[in-house]
Length: 434
Image (cartoon, one colour):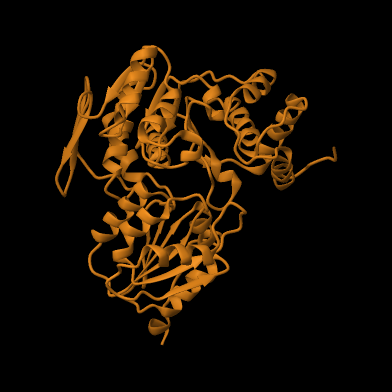
């Protein structure tokens, strides 16, 4: 094999190794991890769920940093640069840190065929394990039980929302999907479930293995008004908390799970009330109901399944009146689009469907056809256009905007990442420019 000196060389190698994009199962990954000697000497928090995983990881990290701890975070996918998938001590890791870990995985692979996700996960876990962390925060890529992240035993499992997504891999209903996500739990170990109405399969699995199950409404809860909110757990309360810096109706649910996790880990990873307040006030995460100030207003959100699009629609509705809402949208071909269109369609006055740079994506023309098939009962005609890239779609939306309008860019990480790759967009409608 020729020498590979750059991260892009290694990522291209990872893409060629395995015939499938996704192949669930731990045997191959566990064998390679064993030869790497992969182990963590700090508490591990593993986060699974349909939506809210990235926000949960970001809040865990922000509070840990404010408490003086050194956290490492692994999340996926990335928006623009691969290095975004790992942060150590609050900083995105560098190519120079990652490349030796890819070489380490390759040396330990011994001919085992790993998927892109499996190979890159092992490289990032290798880097984190050597980074003298106080806590490792690991986001599950898909499901839980058979995801590569699950080779690492967790000290605290967090399961966020459970809804219908990736059903070809995880099963046809919430009970099946919940059972897969519950696979990150471990015996005699806290398992925080922040979904307010979890499937029964989650509690059943916790009982079967003897996990310490924390349920929203039973073991912890929150309340609040428009100014502040309160949280109570098994042995601790917080009152008069400011709302998390991450916007959106579901962020209090995510934050409640985060506070439950810190309460459950208090003996291993104590945090002060001030660290909680500061962490929630300072947390940042691009692409989660991210509002870019200016005219027109720009909203970025990686909502790409019915549950997250419903939350996006509720958040958009709460923003107030805009004369016209322009929507830039691109998604994978396997997404259940009809309920997504049904939720957000009434708020959208003009659609800009986009191609995405991956074979797994639906084409802009296909998205348009599926929108038209699902919008037969629409009360008003809605202009629709198709575009070769998210950047092209955003340019077209901006050109058609009045200063008081709103543009929403949502769907796949590729959609939001496409408009962020040259930095945060600075929009100016043609009317404002004049």
